[in-house]
Amino acid sequence: MKILFLGDVVGRAGRRAITEHLPGLRERWKLDFVVVNGENATGGMGLSGEHAKSFLAAGADVVTLGDHAFDQKDMLSFCEREPRIIRPLNFAKGAPGRGIGVYPDTRGRKVVVAQVLGQVFMKRAFDDPFSTIEAALKPYPRGGQAQAILVDMHCEATSEKMAMGHYLDGRASVVVGTHTHVPTADAMILPGGTAYQTDAGMCGDYYSVIGMDKAEPMRRFVTGMAKSRFEPAMGEVTLSGLYVETDDTTGKATRVEMVREGGRLAASGP
Ligand SMILES: [Fe+2]
Ligand SMILES: [Fe+2]
Image 1 (tube, rainbow, N blue to C red):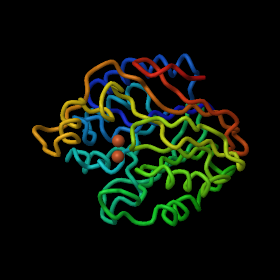
Image 2: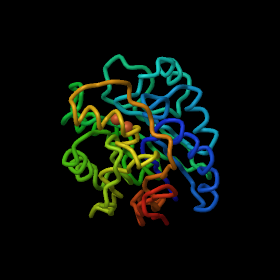
Image 3: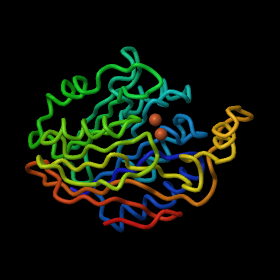
Image 4: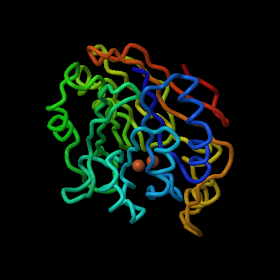
């Protein structure tokens, strides 16, 4: 199965790049299944139902969220109505929506998608992601009913993401990190057949501070004082993520490539 994962979409420029380019990528790379992280798509903070719909219409099979899951208030009810939205499993006990789901690909094969939040350097104390994902994946052994299993590990620390990659090696087909918005150059297949990248990067303008117009973040770093809100940068967008091919019988990854399409980052892809 040919799977594409795209990292955090940032703001209007990121959204436009998804709606303009994802349909073409689906065709060109003959993709069977696409997951897009949308946690920063609406004004840089959260995802509105309207914008989620535009990603699904452009060819995303599932949209994952993150710590910004509910920054846009309509997502509280939208994610209850739309099963293709995945929020972190360990967001909060009473959070609406779901953190894991099973979805059909182009040929009716099944893909499990789940997301967990890490604990290191995060704004809130979230529940242990390791025991949470362990329990959630128990009904879906790799090589069983589902042909592929993808876990989005959303957190700040590279160490915690790597630990999750190894923890799920042999259980997931793909473990990919999100949240830090800068792609790491460590895409690999772990010994147990799990495709892994510490951070997928963002779908946004890289001539920025992690997707935000650079003026205000620089002012805050340099002077320690805030003057205005963070605004998403509006320049040319690089679509960033991970391309994975998996074996339908075993669920193991057989090929992994980093993806960088368009914009200022050096190109890379299958
Ligand atoms: Fe995040
Ligand atoms: Fe993000």
